[in-house]
Length: 234
Image 1 (cartoon, rainbow, N blue to C red):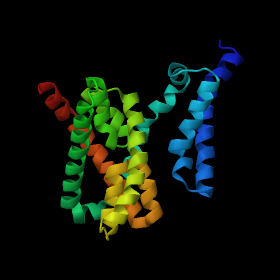
Image 2: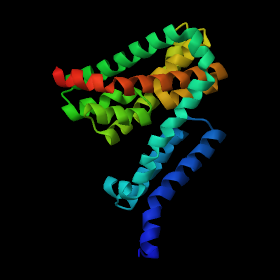
Image 3: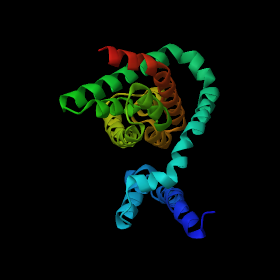
């Protein structure tokens, strides 16, 4: 039977992760800033804590792996925005389908191309390819095509943060007047972080961004076997 000390030690990292996430979320609500976003502040605080305690990634995952496993059931929740926006999908499905396919292909090809130019090995290239998909979907795609899912999750977060910053700059440069265009830009280029930024602009933009993010994830998961076959045949 495990001792109280071992149980307490096993709960430290999960509780620290959840606690720091909610703390950063509270701070972000009071003072919205990219650096106070839970996707930035919480991981930064966890890394600082791990360094102070001389802990490593294996120590963290040993106790907190079940949090990562919850991403699977959480994926089911992505059916909600699709159902809520079913009328929009019926009206604009050709545009949405074209944008999702072109955007996904561009993201994967550019990731593979730049990684190849930098001389990165095959594992890193494959892990980078799904970087423009939300985390639950990206980890599935990464595993299917031969990448490292945990590494892909890091690339997803980095892409989302840079995508949100780039999205703000692009909206000032590009003549995007419709809420659909602005929302699609964020949903395709910055997934979860982009959806949050889109909601700050407007309700329509946020809804479109969330819908595009989900459609991109589903499309890539369904296409993953084909992508893997093309990569291994090349």
